[in-house]
Length: 490
Image (tube, rainbow, N blue to C red; front, side, top):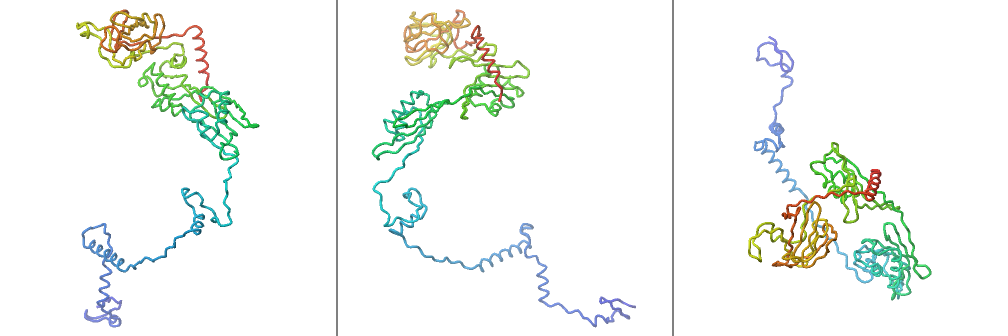
């Protein structure tokens, strides 16, 4: 029998026979050190400490990390601070020289940054020289005086009065707006005991006027520069979208104009219910554009709303000042709302049955008593004509006003009457003052309202009046509407 040994040599005979190859190359036995090294090499000394927490491998890794950290701390070199020397303090000329070459705050005298400090070759001046001229800028404040602004800037009283006379001859000082910047140039003076003379002055007196003063031959001369201004209104259109206010502001409309626009259309329809995202807003605002580039925007002139499923709304502001109203493009306007309180105060007695405070009997109180301080102004609750103004029975000083739609209002217990019979008054106009005349226990207003001659509760009256322009006023109004609608949107 032939057997192949591990060394690749054959042998014959029994299995106890030693092969020739093994006899030639015997395998040496491993030493103890090598066995230890081999065992240590198989051990993972740095396992992942984030896995298998609490196991034997984890504790072995933690022990290895602790040993390495302790070895690093033990073998770290000791660092000792190195003692340095402190520069001796400077004094006298050395201090001045070092300070002049340093950068320091202005609070130290503002003399730093020089190359060298002053030495013995520098002669002090007996008088500091002044600049030949000084350019200044003064601001005109609210309630300020033009002459006072110039005097604060250092202008002499004589020059400031002369400048004010010249400016007043060109424009009213009431036109000066707070914040107006005044540029001045003050010239050379003979000595420091007198004020510098005013050589030049320039400022924007109005949006369309620039004024300049210049000293010529010892006297101030005025120069007017008229600035061309274009008053074409600004028209802005756009989709309502998710928010009427935000869309109009994003289109470039001023905030106050958008607020006026919303109030105007709210007087004709419900903004939340009748205005939809697909509708288009159309507003026209006063605008003044100067040739120098400045732009001023004013009040709202036109409020339009183009609705997809309804008649377009076109409102035009018509009238002067506070009496201006919103008219439809057809020349018609309507005012709605509850009747307002004619005097500022508190209600002391309401409409209905009550015990009379003086007569002591139960009787119908046909009006409303409003307690207010003596002499408080009483305003007309509606437009109308004064039917009666005088003294009558228990009402004392009394005024009766005939308004629209069969509505009449009465005002009693006045201390003084401010209107006469037959005069026409407007809503909100002062017609008298609170008093305690007639059957009265103290200063208050007795306010009474009649509808077609029947007394009604003043707080239940809703006012609605329609005004239609006609004749020359209607023709002028239509011309105004045409000029506004001809403005091209930006």
